[in-house]
Image (cartoon, rainbow, N blue to C red; front, side, top):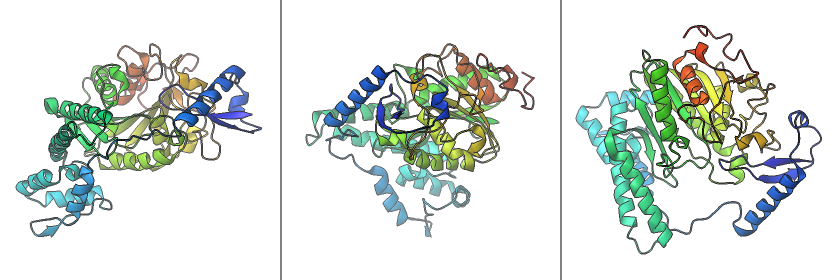
Amino acid sequence: MSCLTVAAETPPVLLGCSAVTSFPELDSSPGLPLWRVLLALAVVFMMLATTGWTSVRQHRERPQLRAAELAAWEDGTVGGRELPETDSSSPRRIARFFASLTAGQRLGLAERYPLVVGNLAGVPLRLRYLANRRGLAKARAHERERMTDTRLTPEGRREAGRRMHRFESMLAGGRQILAFDPTGSGRAAEVFGDLGRADRVSVIVPGADTNLLNFERTDRVFSAPVGMARALHRAERRAGPQTRTAVIAWADYTAPAGIDIDTMSGRLARDGAERLNELARSLPGGSQLSLFCHSYGSVVCGVAARELPARVTDIVVSGSPGMRADAASQLGTEARIWAARDADDWIQDVPHLELGGLGHGVDPVSPAFGARVVSAEGATGHTGYFTPGTDSLDNFAEIGVGTYGAVRCAAAREGCSEGIYGAGTE
């Protein structure tokens, strides 16, 4: 009997069991103790009895600000010309359209449709940053109104306050917000460094339970996308001071929330993979890209791998429940595949398998998968991989700037940087 385990960002619970006769990966390692299986099942049954698969918020629906702008954009014009379609136009077509406008026309569109312009691949970077500042200010004003809306529950008003303060924080200090959508739990992306001039760009792809409220944190700073990206950017500047680098905290996909069927399936990963591929193909310049994919984010990267452009040279997964493949060679990419796991990450107890569309496949740190396994010494728990002072962060930085010879391999997995051009140099 083998059991499927939910691999969310919190310690896992088993989703259910089915009769399975052969899983080589499970056969090669000790099974879960019976008491743990029974305890996990009891937790699941209790959750299903009390909350169901997902928790339903009883708050009044938030204003659909971006949907309203998209509807207006469809009927809009500039200089007597229709505006390009947002869902079928290529980034190159969008770039050509905006290049054909006057500076005043471009600014006018950013003012009228900030939540459209700020999320359009192909729009000049500085204009996207400006538009997203306008969009954040607009969303902040709406949440401030909702804070005193008596039609909302008390919890609804408190959530409005939390969102208002998050948007206020994102407006501070000249931050470079590459994408912002307040719809639902929200999506965002932020740039650290000069993205337009960078030689090498690193993209943080976070995991489940990522939303606008935890896009950044004041506690457990390095477990949130902004903290991860900021730490990696600083580490890359130390590792390669002569290399022009930029890092993107990319939470611009809808991640699974809590423990539900989406966490075990590939549905949201497929949607996220499409968005990740669009990002990789639309970034300006000829920079090389490295993807740093944490937890469920590694599922997104695994699904995206086959369609990624050649500029993506490295895919690094940490705390991974699997990449929806049985081996790195099955990902269909020429990018190097790296993996990290710290000693006390609970994800190691998750049976890495796929059955009937549930589960995410072979463990990326297992010898059978064939990834280059790097040291994560110093990292603790499931979200400690980007903490300063850890081997994992230092290794990520060396990969990000291309100094592969300085990468420290995991114990008993020496040679992780062999066969890479220039790996012997630092």
